[in-house]
Each structure stands twice: as structure tokens, then as C-alpha cells.
Amino acid sequence: MRLGITIPFEPFQNRHIVDLVRVADRCGYTDAWSFESFSTDGFTPLAAAAMISERMRLGTAIIPVFTRPPALIAMSAATINQMSAGRYVLGLGISTPNIVQQWMGIPFEHPHPRLRETVAAIRAIFRGEKVTLTGKTVRINGFRLDMTLDVPPPPIYIGAQGSRMLRLAGELGDGLIVNFITAEMLPGMLEYTRAGMRAVGKDPSNLDVVCRIIVAADEDETVARSMLRRSLTAYLTVPQYNRFFSEMGYANEAGTAMELWQRGERKQAVESIPDRMLEAIYVIGDAKRCRQRIDEFIRAGVTTTALQFVSFAQTAEERRSRILRAIENVARAG
Image (cartoon, rainbow, N blue to C red; front, side, top):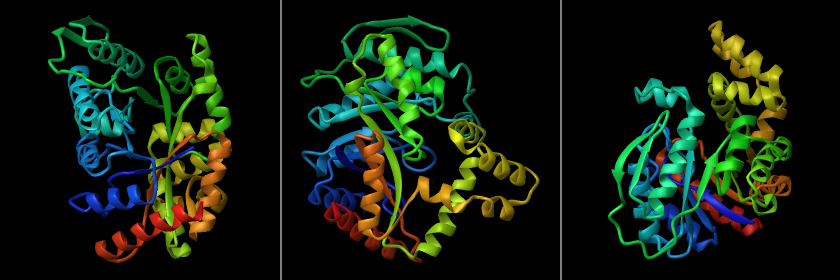
């Protein structure tokens, strides 16, 4: 099992990322995984982390395949991989229509062919080929990466949620990235991915499962529950996440939250989220309890955690201080 963290996150989205990575490195965390939605990009924080830690594995979880052409993704991935002496994992996914279409202004069309063609193009680029590809969603004419590569190319992990994407992740990827799940949901999800692996002759027993888990350690639990309930409601009102939770056993909860939200009853939508759902998705409590909950995800099939620590203190300085203490305490609790 690999105990990793998510970087960066509020309030570490600027120069304070240095403190975050140094503390995690000193405490024995094995990985640092970035993400990309509407704050920092996915690659730049890892460049900083590569200079701070000489041993941590670095990964993107995930880079949307719509927001950059495959050649540019390959260039950035190869750069981080070289800077880190081969410690990088390229995590790709289709993202959501909200991010791709509404925020970036890029049509969210043919997501599964886009993922398949992007992965194929990037693997060819990593092999040093001069790549020409005319696909349904990707077009490249004669691109070759002009970089001396003295380390093996990075593995490609796929971020997935629904059954079709989970199976595609097994077929296309070297590992799986999941997010906003419960430990109870994971075994069923992994069956789809392992089926995809078997379909192309891969050994399912070698699957690395990276899971981003939000951790509120040593926080006021009443405040933490209130804030995280709001956060979960926001995700449940995104159609893609709503379908995912419905498919994975929370159809009543997801349907109720969406219905109330669409009627303009926002407060009622937040209050409709039951404690059992909140506690299953988020890790809340003192450091010992948090470590026990993290271990539940490990027993369910997670092999690499990407813990995103949160604090609800009033000032950014106090939030940073609390999170750094929590990172240390959770590491010691193991």
C-alpha cells in the first residue's frame, strides 16, 4: 500500500506548496497527486514537487483529455517525468461537461473515442514514433517528440467512475484512478475494470488503484460535517456525478438532492444528504479514527491513497497549520 497525498489544495495553492510537500516527504508519504478543475493546473505543482522530494512518486489525477491536444499532454508528461527521474504517472480522464464545455468552451463530444485516441497517440509519441493520426476526435500530422529520454516513459492511469469508463480504464490504462467513492462501492467498481483488463490479456491482480479521499482530521466535527455536506451536494447536482452515485447504490439520495436543487430549495437539498452517506465518502475524526477509515478503503481494494486534507479554520494561516499537523498525525497513527 502506498500512502499518498493530493497537492496542491487550498490553502497551499501558492508558494506554500513547498511546505506541504516537505512535510509529507518527511512523514513518509510515498506519493503526491495533483488534480485539475478550476484552480491550479495539473502539471506545474508536480514540477515543484519534483524539486523538493527525491523519492515521492508524482502523478496527475487527472488531466482532462479534452483541454489539451495529445502532443501537448505528451510534452508536459515527458518533461515532468524527466525532471523527476522517472517518478511520474500520467493520469488521464474525460472530466465533466461542466469543466470542459461550460468553463473551457470546448465541446464535450465523443468522450470515449477521445480518451481511446488520446491514449493511443501519447503511447506512440512516448515510443519515439513520428505520429500521424486521423481519428474521430484526434488529428496529428507528423509529430515527433524532440527530447532525449533517459528514463522509461510514464505509465498511463485512467480516471473513471461509471461502469463503461471503469471497463475502458482496464482496457486502456496501466492503473485506475477513482474519486468520491465509498469503501463499499469499490469492490463492485473494480470488477468492471478487471473485466476490461482480462478482455485485452492483462493480469487483473496487478491493478494499482489510486483513490482521492478527502480527510478532515482533528477538525470540529460539527463544522466539518456541515461544510462537507455542502460540498457533496454541489457534486450531486452535476449530472455526471449524480448518475454515478445512482448507479453505485445511492439513487434515492442523489435523486432527492437533484430534485430539491432544481426546484430552488438549496438549503433543503443540502440537508437531505444523510449522515451515513457523508461518513462513507469523507474521512472525519481524530487522527486515529481517520487512519482506521483510510484502512477501510485499503481493505476494499485501494492500493494508493491520494489524501486531500481539509481544514475549516477562519484564516489561511491557521488552516495551513492545522493541515500540516494533521498530515503528521495521520502518518504517525499508522
